[in-house]
Structure formats: structure tokens, C-alpha cells
Image (tube, rainbow, N blue to C red; front, side, top):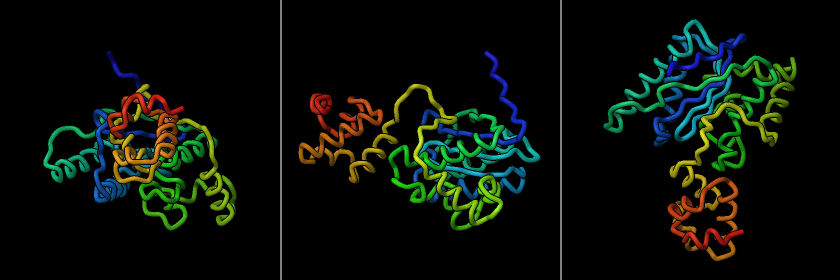
Length: 253
């Protein structure tokens, strides 16, 4: 069955998501995150794309960017080939790392541009990894507040005010606002994989391993399990990761 042609953006701006093949992790440690950002910065000079926002999660990447002199497909082949070659060498593996085709959507209006940017920056908060967007080290939010490395940090704040200081202040406030917006995602109806779920459990419960929840006092354990169920984790997945029995988890209401 032929692939559906990508929607062409009149502005040249796209929200892009890249995911690890079979949802596997593409970043194992800080060095991996740093290497990907270095690669993104390196090929920015070659492909002449603009980056407005990014967020690197354990098994996927969000980017808000503008196509340059090369098509995004060409740029991502360059980035992917470079990063995967290094990653495979580091971990003594072979084969593909990324899902074969990145997912993208055209960004045609300033309103949706800002919504996509906020969605990208809030990804770690909504995943329960951090409480505040400025606490996550692998997104572009800090580039706007402490100094740009990869992103164009002028355009977005300029949509709020021609005064640079006022525009940045309003931009920060906008990015921190709670909302229920949903933008581009690999929404295939599946739940978090076990690696993502374990990370969420540890951050929510303040533990090093999900198994530590077994030792919680009963009320504290029930509260944590109830919250995790409310975040979309299945009873079977919680049982598998925490070691708490199916019946106990099901009984938390």
C-alpha cells in the first residue's frame, strides 16, 4: 500500500516526532542526549533548517522546525545516519534505531506554532518526569532563558511583544500555563511501555525502583497506585513493575 504524501507547509514550519523502533530507548544516558543535540546543531549548518523548540525523551524526540535549503527528509537522514552510527558503535549493536519514517504536521498559523511549542516543552511535565518545565535538561526551554545553542529564540517571544524583555516574560508565562492541548504524537492506542512506565512510577513515588512501592505503608501505597492507574497504567503493568498483587492494585479506588 503506497505511503500517504506528507502535508506541505506553506510556512515551511513543521512539528516533527521521531520515535525509536518498536518504541525502544534511543537515549540511555546523558552522553546520548548530548550527542543527539550536537548532531542536530551540526547538520543545522549543512541543511540550513531553523529550530524553534525541541524535547528529547527516552524513546522519542519532538522538534518544531523550519525547512531550509534541504528537504526535512534529507536532513533527518543525515542526522539519523550520524547518530545511529555512533549509538551502534557505543552499544556494540547493529541495525535500525529509529522508526523508519518520521511523523510531521504542517504548522500554518502563529497560534498553532505557539501551541505546538508549549506542548513540546510540557512533554516531560505531562509524563510525570518533572514538576516544572525548567527542570527538564533535554528540552529547549532553557535556551530561551539562559542562552541559545540550537534554537532561534527571538521569533517566538516576538509574537508576544516587540519589546524583547516583555516578549520573553510573556513567552515564559505562556509555556508554563496548564492546558489540555494535544498536538502531534504517535497516538496508536497503546499505553506507556515498561521503561516509560517505570520512569513515571519512580518520579511520582520518589523511589529508585518501582519495586520499592511494595514496602510503602498501606495508605501511601494505595494513593500512589490509584494515581498511577489514573495516569493510564494498566493493573497488569503495575503488577509486573511493582510486584504488588493484581488484587491489591484492583482494590485501590
